[in-house]
Length: 207
Image (cartoon, rainbow, N blue to C red):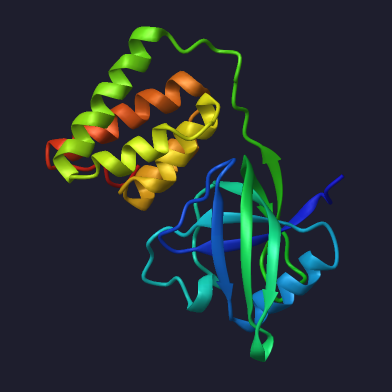
């Protein structure tokens, strides 16, 4: 069982999704300390997207963040010189940040799982609509081969959409919009919206 309080790792421009992987380079002293504690214990931390702010402070020290992040498990850790680390983390589930807790050099917080209802059916016509948007987007961007590789991966629906959300060229706030989806049809519908906006030369900002 994980502790009630988990390390919080705010990152600019980065959103992690459940069932996907992300390499991290840890170099700032407070997060070196966080890494050692995580590796000596439960191997979990919460990655969360920083909001753009002129008073963010260095390395996310005081940066405002979104209220929803992703619980991540460290699956590989490589120590480097000077206390730095290369980590590979895997997203486990979206979580809501309830309250930050002082007391350590790095940020930490109480969190709660963000419900994702996997029992809601994803209708066939809606699946086809997403495929149409994906293929139109890939044709416009010239990434048909890369899209085919992603779609050919042996993944279940949620993992496939989360992998697409990580791989396609969405803005960080757009990825955050996807991360906060309550169920599979909502995740697919939000992705359709973003793909259609991108094809029209527009993007959703400030979500």
